[in-house]
Image 1 (tube, rainbow, N blue to C red):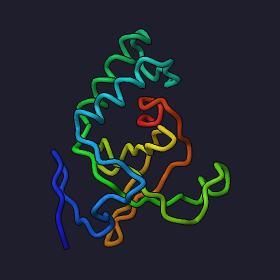
Image 2: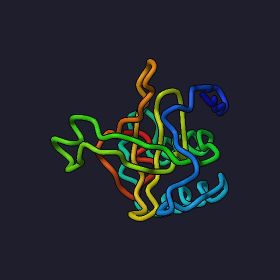
Image 3: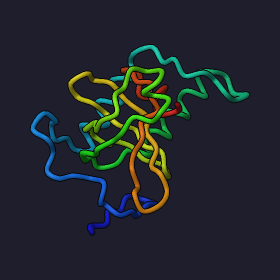
Length: 145
C-alpha cells in the first residue's frame, strides 16, 4: 500500500494507478494552473451564493480553487448512480487527471474533451472516486458543484 500526501490530506493510494494511461498526458501543477486559469477567461456559470457582489465572490472562489490545486496524477473514477441515470455515464472506470483537492472533494480533468469533472472520495477501505455527473470547460463551476 502506498500513501499519498497533499497539503492537509493523507490517504491510501490503492485506488490510484501509475503510470498514466497512454491516452492521458502527464502534466505538472503549473500546467494544471494554466488550464484552470484559461477556463477563468471564459464565461463562468457559477451562481453567487453569498451576500458579496458577484465579481468579488467569483474572485474569492477562483482564489480558493487555485489554492486547492495539487501536483496532478492519474485517477480511476466511477460514475455514481445519478450520473449513470441522468448524465449518460456508463458503469465503468473513467481515467482522468486529479488537479485539485479539498477534503473528499476532487476536481478532475479529462484532456481529450478538455472538460472538468467534480468527484468525491468515499470514506472507508475502498476509497473510490465517484463523478457527480456534470462536466464542462468551466473549472470553477464544476469545482463548486
